[in-house]
Length: 588
Ligand code: NOJ
Image 1 (cartoon, helix red, strand yellow):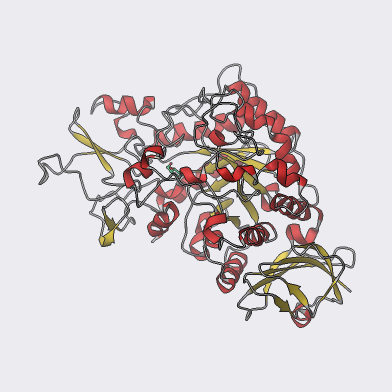
Image 2: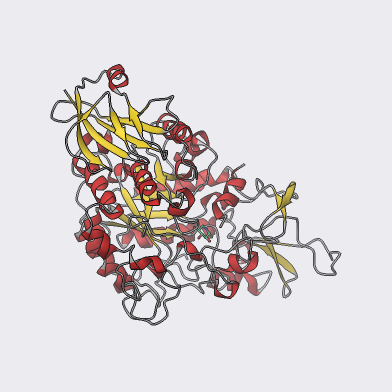
């Protein structure tokens, strides 16, 4: 599945708070503990794809009550926040990313009371809830669009992007205004016979783009944000935020070489994405969330070409997104020590001191287990990735099941595909079902996800061995590795807030860094993290490099070792087995 790769190519109601709503404007989140920094600067954010996490009512589809039932699990893993992909009413063409009502809950996921209960129960466990906010487009079944489509003179006509076509095409059909394409295949323009005009959609035709140049659209969406902030959400993950505006000239896109997986000619998307006006919207939205009590957060879905490109999403005065996703590191897609070193270093040095949000997995891309795994050492490699994700100076975004080593289960037959891009693009594009299969809770027939005979996506065979129940019992499981790393972030100042200094610049096979915080002492030491990215043993000599950092060090006191060996480690001889990991405090 090539969602990410396609996005990389791109990189070049009015409503008021409903009466009687339970007001949770400031749930009882505790402070971030060890320091006064905002919680999100060192957070572990766990993405839940609600359809696939836990079904509580036996219909084969996950729901809000199911998530609430699993909060103790999330607390035991140690996450600070959960991000729910969309749970609003939706025709589910794009599984929730086509929203027909922004201030309600889709009945298949539960009720608004279930939502309030989830937020409250999460807050009791000091877990914050982030909503997915889809600003670029609505569903074509949203009342705004139905009104807009009702006539050319409707007051909401201008809430969407309606344009005249270019007469009749060679095929005898109405020709669209230009050659712009949808990311999800074919023309980005959909003809409406009733008015004789086209509307624009960057994603599916059932997802018409809003016109963000209309101030009423902005007002309506900001009211949506306030609605959820008032209900106690900790913030938002902003969907496809770089697609909010389109170039007003409507000039044709440059046609590039080759064709995409849908058989369309490749086109340059720079007239359709990343227009500068987006920054004004983000700046104003940041003011909306800042006006709410507590430390609310904006996470952004952006795919950028490098750290310099990523830096602009924080805003000129750090007044836009607090955490735009840093996809550069996690989607290196190759165990290449030099590439990781360069990208991790850039994230530390080129973001003007801002916090990178590292991410390896989400609901749009094959799981990292398969993207990085060599088929032989997948578990060891997954431990390396977890270490990069959680032992770096960053916030960390993880995806349900990543902590187990869930793999991608791509459908084998077109008739089984649920994701429409997989139907349209088959067999080159098989869609995103593979990374959205049900959470693997236990080794039973339905893996503890549902009691329904047929879950919405099949339970992967791997659930017989790769599941929460089995891994929680196993001290050497990937799950335990994640839990221990998260616990270290909480308990060690160096691991939580220390600078990340990349070492060993010449080593081809090893990725090594030091976490060094202000005021290193004998009782609060700096930490070394070393990962072997090769299938050969590696021995590292770290004494000189550590000395150069002005750190006093005689030996390493082991905190985590993938060889599960005991005892201290000699600074001159840090031994790593193939794909091994070592984390140790620098003592003198
Ligand atoms: C990005 C989301 O992550 C993806 O799942 C969705 O299909 C598109 N945006 C459109 O909303």
